[in-house]
Length: 105
Image (cartoon, rainbow, N blue to C red; front, side):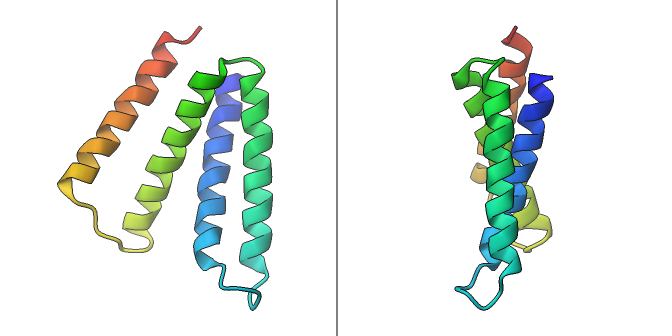
């Protein structure tokens, strides 16, 4: 169950970060609402996960999900370019998240 909360938290972080990209002052309200709700739900689910997992593992996995998720969205949705060193670094993050999951009790 804590891992489910952690995955939901990471997904909500990505949604909030996408909304943040659309915030342009006060003209559009929906990105601000989505961003605040997304980060709020993300932190709520992260706190639930941290009740059952160590804080270090939960936070590391949460940031990994967010980093990989927003990078994927940036590449496929926003058409941003990624260079080989960035891709390799993301691979290390994925390996680290998998390692933390496999070694956490």
